[in-house]
Structure formats: C-alpha cells, structure tokens
Length: 324
Image 1: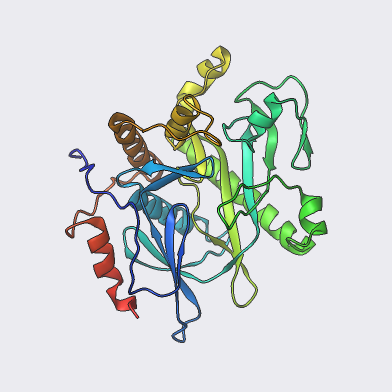
Image 2 (image 1 turned 180 degrees about the vertical axis):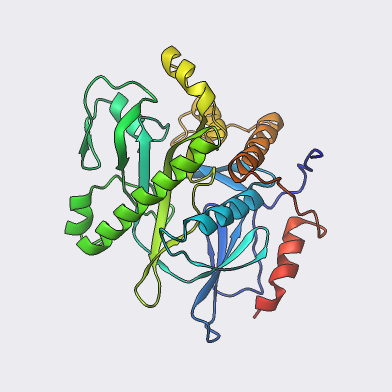
C-alpha cells in the first residue's frame, strides 16, 4: 500500500453539537438521549496515545486502527461475551449501548512482562512475590511464560488518577463487584484471553497480556465494552523473536504501544518527569506498528479513510444525524 499521510491526525474530537461529553485518555465520548432504542453512547477513538497514566502524543491513523481492530475482535468473540456495539457510523467511531463501567479493570497476563508500575515484572523485580492474590515463585526471569495466565485486576481510575492493584477478595469485600459478578467477569476474561492467544499463535504472534473493561447495561447484563485485543489494550510479541530474546535476556520484538512506552521509560521517570519530545521518526514507526498489527492479526489490508478536509471534518459529517 502507498505510504500513509502522517499529517492527517485526530488529536481530539470535541464536537459541540453532541450532548453530554466525557473526554477520556484516548476516546472522546458523548451520551445520547434515549430515542426508544435504549441509552446509547458515541465513542470516538482519537489518535492520542496514553501510557503511565499520561497522554504521550498523537499517532496518525491510530484511532482508525483501534476501532477497526476492535470491531474485528468483537465480531469473533460474541460467542464468549456479549458486547456493547450498536453501529459503526465512521472508521473512528462506535455507537455502543450505554453501560455503567464496572470499577475494576481486568488485566490478564500470560508472561512476566511489563514496564508500568503495576506490571508484574516491575513488582517482581522490586522483590514482590505476592501480588493481585497470586503468589509467584522465586527464580522467574523477565518475559518468562507464567505457569498459567493470571488476572491482575486494578481499580478503574475514572478521574484520571493512578490505577491501584486489587485482588479478588478485596474486590468483593469492598463491594466493588458482587461475588457473582467477579466470577462472571473473571471466567469471561480468561476465555477471551485464551481465544486471543490462539488467534495470535496462528498469526505468528504471542498475546502477552491484555486488559478488558466490562459494564452493566440498563437490564443489569454484563457487557464487554471499550475495546478488545488492540495494540492499545494488549501487548503482542513476534513469536519468531521470543526464544532468542529470552535466552539473551532482551525484550522480544513487539508491535504495540510498548514501542513508544519503552522509548519514554528509557529517557525519564514517566510518572514524575516531563515527557521528552517524541521525534517524528518514532511517531512514524509507532504508526506503522499499529497498521502492521491490524494487518497481521486480521489478515486484511488497512484502508485509510482520507475523505473530508480533515479526520475531524469527516467524523463530524458522519455523526451529524446524532447532533442535538
């Protein structure tokens, strides 16, 4: 495919004609009035990239890649978990059933990996062996496969604050979820992760870890929301690179936002220091990594939507039927 136009960026989607805005780290959302079809929400995937609880920069085409890859996965996991999807009016947009997001972010990990403060590798390297309700043995090495995938839940920081580690007992004891809800979301998350790992293996990849978000709809059903198995919510490695990298004690080749996350972490304390300016070549490399991830996982060619004067202009046009 021809080179992507890296000047077409959607850093934000602030649209005054849409009601009840909520702006997250990556998505700009609007709650729609109930028109007899149930409460719905517009979720617009911007090109912002988030890590370490901060916005790092914007990556061209990232929002379209995320929306279309999540769409591909939602279509292939509906037999495991019902999801929030109603319609896709634009390549960067999903209309979803409005759900009350559960206050627990479910992270499933298959390997001792990660760079953030709540990752199992960071905690393990700091001498922690009991974490998230699990006890890990001594002697594990960075990027080693865990005996079995584990769930490492964190509190959902709705106000932009830091996510905090949780365990199953604390989740239930503190009333974040009922015992039945925890049983359902944990079993569903492990089943989704197993499906994701199998698809990744078939594509020559390793799904290392991923996060899932669940919410309650108006009828009290638990629905899978947000996104699934995208480069933003998941860590992928190239399977062919794993054995040698593990032997040498280096990080396997990846094509997810770990590329830029590792670049930042190597140059500052990303939780405390100013984020250094990210160079254009790193932004281009990260954009290409997102596109490659989409094409490798889905087996489909990424087709950029270049209509409209700008991405925001196109989004506005496609969402005009929902203007108040």
